[in-house]
Length: 450
Image 1 (cartoon, rainbow, N blue to C red):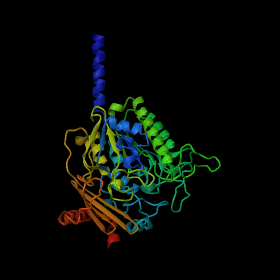
Image 2 (cartoon, one colour; image 1 turned 45 degrees about the vertical axis):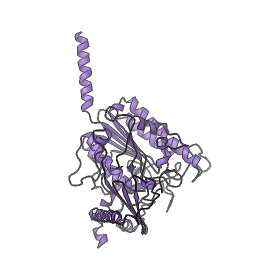
Image 3 (cartoon, rainbow, N blue to C red; image 1 turned 90 degrees about the horizontal axis):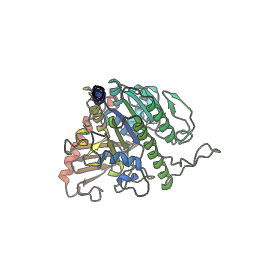
Image 4 (cartoon, rainbow, N blue to C red; image 1 turned 30 degrees about the vertical axis):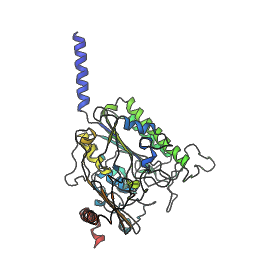
């Protein structure tokens, strides 16, 4: 009896210790995966059982938004918890080989300052300073050169591509001035054989297996299914790569399934570590799909501020804390993830750089009902200017000189423009957007504005 009581007390102590330990955090980001490219959102032709399992075991968002309709700005918002406009020069994807694609970005590029400055506090830095092991494995896209790289932003381990895209087998960048491999191990170029999705998965699994008693943060930003569209099983030894199959839905589907398989491997590793109940796991896409993907039923695509360009799949699980099988109608954005994760970890944010995002845990745990929010978007590329504001159910869109107004509660597909019938509502939203633009002006662009 005494022995059984002793063992029971030890078990209780172990459980108490585990309860006090901050949760691990695994944040998985897909690249250009559309709202309608996953089965949990009604995709009819691509099975995604492992992504769907995150939603079944946790919560699926019905109104989750990317901070921007392209890669770089969304990633900036994710890691800083703030509107990317506050940083300056990162309102569109950084071009291949460090190309600035609009006036402010070009100005920063010429000054050697195009990227996320190391002075910006980030999610990884907050967690690392509070006892977490940290790793970024995958696509970075927040600046070239070590001064803008992951290792300057709180990540102890980095393996991945620095730029926005790459051939999945040669690992060379595609697009303007293409031909350079941007595959890095820590802050040094490296050569590996294999399909990028597989390489990132293998590296992530290896890093997870090496964890000890400390909580860990794994940021796993896959580049899939971003173009080029390449079949994982079509490698040609003669060319050293696989053909590019853009606009071929069947090949795109194989890329998404390979991504889903990789997520399944991550989930199994969490289980093998006995860490499922103490791991906050988040999955989402960085923006809507390009023409290779499917954003239905929503209007628009990547690079637009229509719902199809910014509304993205997102699912979160934390067994024991988040009830399984829920659908959350709370409007949320990428920048909300930093305050949410810090709240889960019991880590304070910076008073000097307060988050624009909100803590989603009360909504995820159903301790607070959904609330109305005012959310803003602005996208720049060359002379293109696209803006939007959602205030409650109303959404105002400015698309390179044309203005629109929609009521998302009645018209989530943005089919009926109400601006002529509601000029006062449109004027109010236009004024809110202008005030927000003034409020988020980046200090490092002050000289540019003069």
